Image (cartoon, rainbow, N blue to C red; front, side, top):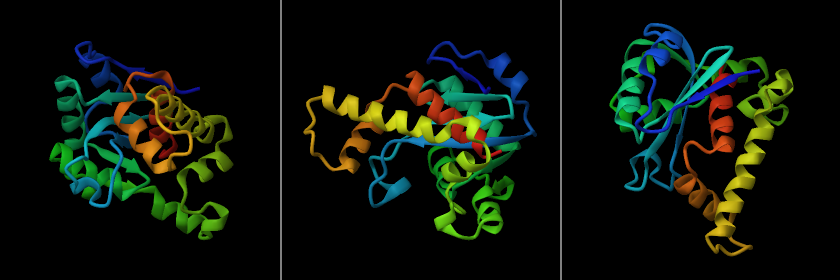
Length: 195
């Protein structure tokens, strides 16, 4: 069972974070952002919401709305090796935080494709691979719960029931509270799955 840590803005436990994630380590890494349109990380609507770090037993979701957590993310990324599953995360922290982790990123997407080259068999998809090899992690269930939450948020806002999925997702990514338990579980497990 993964322990998930999260501090609301203004309540960051800096010492606890640094104790669990000292600089220079190797950590699972993921980010959550606003919904990306055609220009992706370079669009004016792009915003990085959280950065997640994980060890085998603990994941910490840093809320970038808090300046202290923003600085902690920058500092840890500046001197640690990260394990991620998408180039999106590497580019996102470069654009949003000004930290280049390219030379210190272990890309599990490449490793996954080498281990299981068939995309139909889940070779390049982190969630499928994690579900197949670590079903107890529950990443696919966390993603489904996140999607259901986004649909609930959309409906509560008065969104049309037959709206395109991308519209519902864009609204969800922009409006979900970073501290919502469903969002936290999804975000944290994505970083754990990279390990």
